[in-house]
Length: 228
Image (tube, rainbow, N blue to C red; front, side, top):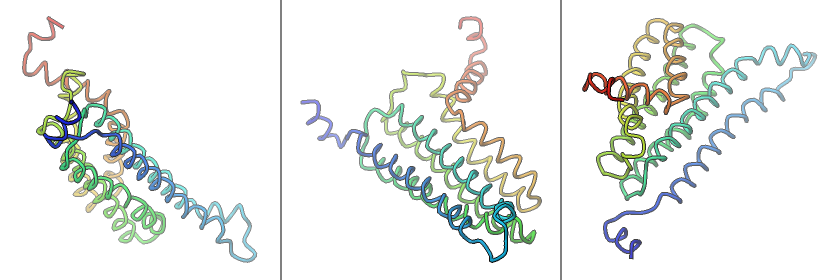
């Protein structure tokens, strides 16, 4: 009876979408290591293995940066869908758009590995390419959150303070990544610091969402600090 009612309203479960999402994240993570394997095999005649591996440090750095990016995305995806109780056809497309962006991470990662130790202009271009994708991913999380919230696909009562902070943080992340891109077009290293700070925040989305939610609650109702 409940299944028929959900079907009549266009509602669906999230099991298959979760399975597809985890599969895409897993494949994207796996693709990153291909460049590392290729770099390890590309040994010039007469070159020692130790010097070759030291020469390939940009590939290793790019691998870990790419892995961290995708893994943090998975953490946030897992956190968002922890609130989602059911799905609809629109959510399938919103989630699919985000997965398309995540699966593209190996491309700017490979570009970054090749040019991070090159000319200044090439290095800046590689970082901007990575930053643009990072902005698109951050924006996709904001769109995902707004969609599930406005379509009432979530359980708001589970963690109301964290829920409030989550929406605010995802909106702020899109603006922050735009600021990172502007700074990166002027100077690379301050932009790297800004991106690193954002990584630290979104590596622990629930914790920072609770902090943001409490702060917004105090701003909206100063008396709440005495009653909680």
